[in-house]
Amino acid sequence: MNQIIDKSKLRALQWSVMENVSASAILPLMRIGDELGLFTALAEAGPCSSQAFADAAGIDERYAREWLHALCAAGYCSHDDDFTAFYLSAEQQAVFADEDSKALMIGAFDILVGNVHGIDAITEAFKTGDGVNYGDFHACVFKGTARFFKPSYKSNLLEKWMPKIPAATEKLEAGGRLCDVGCGKGLSTLLLAEHYPKASFVGIDIHEPSIDEANEEADQAGLSDRLCYDAADAESYGGDYDIITFFDCLHDMGDPLGAAKYARSRLREGGMVILIEPSAADHPSDNMSVIGQMYYSFSTMGCVPTSKSQKVGLALGAQAGPQRLSDIMLEAGFKDTEVVFKNASNMVISCTT
Ligand SMILES: C[S@@+](CC[C@H](N)C(=O)[O-])C[C@H]1O[C@@H](n2cnc3c(N)ncnc32)[C@H](O)[C@@H]1O
Image (cartoon, rainbow, N blue to C red):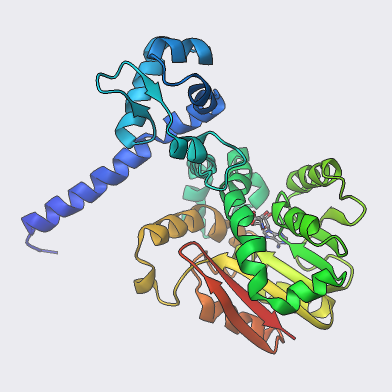
């Protein structure tokens, strides 16, 4: 390895590292800000001095000021010319302070903090090749997964994804039955149940605490008569369905082919599967992007260890690509697969029988 260093390539690499280090350095500040309600406090109190902000949030002024300056440097917070007044712009409020906003992104930092907590277990798994059970991840991972992907479900599921699959919307409008496999805390199932009042819905997931929370949400929404959640594995749930969905979870499963075959066996005549997966191309060379960096990293810390902890342990990874996913569905006995929607973050694949 006697290579000559190209100075301009070295500088470019160092700058790229610097950008990533800077982005990573703000991670604990985001988590602390979220935990202490600093974003909502600033949204309500601003424009205000660091002292007024600290008073409103009930925190120490010196910490408040340093936090504000760090966030201003990141462009996550706004300020006047001489840094005496701080506030969140409308866009910053939508991204950090409004839990119901379709632009909310604060949940990403929950996932990242959860992944940092997982370092010891995943380091060990790197050496042994074993997996780590999804349920053994830090609680921030579960909270963050639901929260980070919530805006995407709210913006896309009913307005952009379902209209691309007319056969599915017809079934649900007529009063069909849908099972949402690997539903996590169940937001996707809840949104569908709210939108299609004649249909009935089941969400299943191996993670019992998520299922308990999902059932509470269904109760609160007054939907329990036709929406329920059960703790079950992708190859052990009961019932027969017109539609079975796998939203951002098939690649997390140890045996996606087994899960797809089982889903096939649970479908009524003319039934279908809808897959939503992280957007990816088939070849790694086409996934070398900001989004690819994020998904391969999430996958290393979450998807691969989860899959390896289960039977078969195929470990597809979050960037498996449409061809590999399609091959699995065809091998499981589906007649046809089609990518009906794709944007920078997600792709939707419909699989017919
Ligand atoms: C990335 S999360 C996605 C959750 C949810 N569908 C969403 O989009 O927010 C993956 C989910 O798959 C679930 N999962 C993993 N393996 C499973 C299996 N074999 N059977 C059922 N659920 C499984 C996990 O418990 C987790 O809730």
